[in-house]
Amino acid sequence: MMIYDTMLITGCGGDIALALARIAREAGAACRLIGCDIHADHPGSVFFDVCELVPRADDGAYLEVLERVVKAHGVDVIVPMSEAEITVLLEAGHLGTFAGVPVIAANRLAVETGLDKYATFSRLAAHKLGVPWTRIVAEAPPLALPCILKRRRGQGGKDLRVVTTEEEVKLASLMRADDLWQQLLLPEDQEYTCGLYRARTGETRMIALRRRLQDSATSAAVVADSAPFSSLLDGIADALDLNGSINVQLRLTADGPKVFEINPRFSSTVRFRHTLGFHDFIWSLQETRGLPIGTYRAPSPGIRMYRYADEVVIG
Image (cartoon, rainbow, N blue to C red):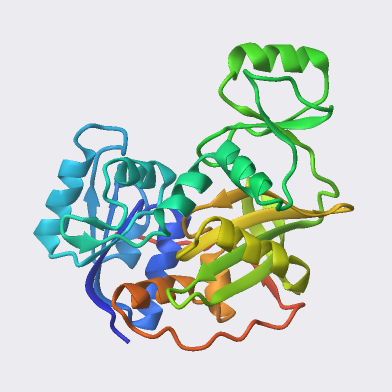
């Protein structure tokens, strides 16, 4: 089922890019896989035909070097992985196409909203969708303690901490003014990661995984019944005018499901979901080609998945 001839996946040393490369290989979605990253000390060469070096996304030369990679290898589709790269492409007006080839990403509104966690809160709250209270540190103190202190932009797990005292509030107000206070959602064991895809036909597809975290990544997951979340997820798709794939993170509280983050990209559970029939990466590729995406049957609740480490040797 070859969809593209030569695919470029950025951040090729990271776990999500490696998962996408494996999916593309297994599905026969591309003839050649090109990767790029800011360093070469990673296992990407096992999964990609070629791995190129590029500057960091915040380097002024990034787009120029990326274009050279595209031209040198005859790339005909780009899959950006890191939020930093997606941000640069968005700001430069290249979210849909870059160097004359399609870029695989959700629509602009969904990406803009997901990249900014306060914008996520504001948009969902305006549509009366379940969200925890959220405040910008520089603008107001937390509504209650304990609460979460988290980055406003970037990967949510980085620099996330639970704040319990007024002294911690004062220190954070000085050191992290641009970040966010957010309601501490309980119970901890009711955290879900939900794949959400809206096709160009308007059809919405979803999958809910109850997950266990290790070092801010999903280490184990069990398929959950998506019915308790379907109204919320449909509402999110409407609020974002969604086209494409995003990942919604929420906790099921005594007051119902509350969304604390949206990832406007493929998530670390993309291969978990793919093995269960939720083929959002392949659907995204197919739709950019104007191809039908077939039918989707949600997996049965209770199926368990585990992430484990593997070893590769490059000699």
